[in-house]
Length: 233
Image (cartoon, rainbow, N blue to C red; front, top):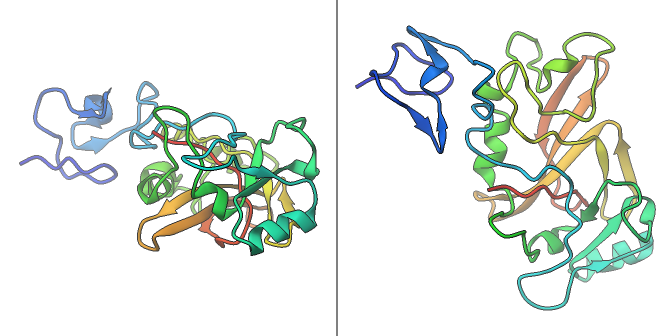
């Protein structure tokens, strides 16, 4: 049987069409060499389709809509009371910043995704930090090939790894809230909620821009913070 592993191969698959979801990935091989042609846009994301802007959804699967809070005191109260809550950047009254809402862990647990979408899961998160999505020619491994050269940062495309295929999650460096309602990480951290299967709870995936080492790293962070939401399908 031919070796069909993505990321490593010792031989080309048998002749014919090889599909990943609806995407024809037959052309990713050249003999026994794995290549990444520009017409295979979602190889890196391994089939995950992401919403392109941060969520402002407040609808829930049942019960009252997610509460929007307008100051750090109310954010902390909601968190301590296990109340689903969210806030706009700088506690604005609407999405004037275009950054979407920052949700606490109780909100992401009950939010109603748009039709056909869901909260990302562990597999979606892991695919983003798989070898297929990372430029391994850069040490430390880089999650954004636009950042391989000094001064070439683009915080709008933290995971747009065009060297190996666009993951589709062009997460912005819009920072986060902590459980006290304090905001931080503007221009340095891009993050979203996902469901961690192993932990059976919701956690934030952070992508952090590290100027001193000139790379972007991915780390799973606290479940106590307030993060944006990108839906997946």
